[in-house]
Amino acid sequence: MSAISVKKLEERAVLPSYGSASAAGADLYALTDGEVTFRPGETKFVHTGIALEIPEGYVGLVYARSSLACKRGLAPANKVGVIDSDYRGEIMVALHNHSGEVQKVSDGERIAQLVVAPYLRAEFREADKLTDTERGEGGFGSTGKF
Image (cartoon, rainbow, N blue to C red; front, side, top):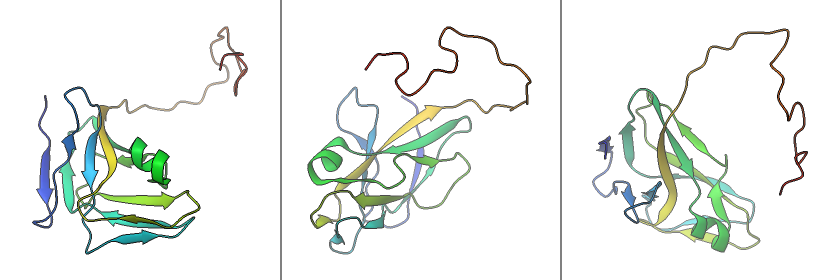
């Protein structure tokens, strides 16, 4: 397991943690003064009170927690948050209430999950032609497989 430095910006902040030995995502925890209330269709930033030192060549990806998204309709507004390795500010999660009911998040509640993954930084070059593939330009269900 690799180590990632985490700075608590407030003493009450909770470091990310894995829910099981094989979990890919580490839980991120809300740092609030009381409850944060979300009306239907509303988006709010929720503090975590932590900053990360993600290694060069890696990215932090912030995903929804399935239980929060499926049972309560709360999920990251941008679907997947991207934390670049050179960012040192507070990790905040923009949660959106997709449900038709008021939802609340409490201090210390698990609000999202963080996956740290390697990435390829590419050089994009203009080309007149691309190589042919069996699929070609077919997209959006064109393979007939669901």
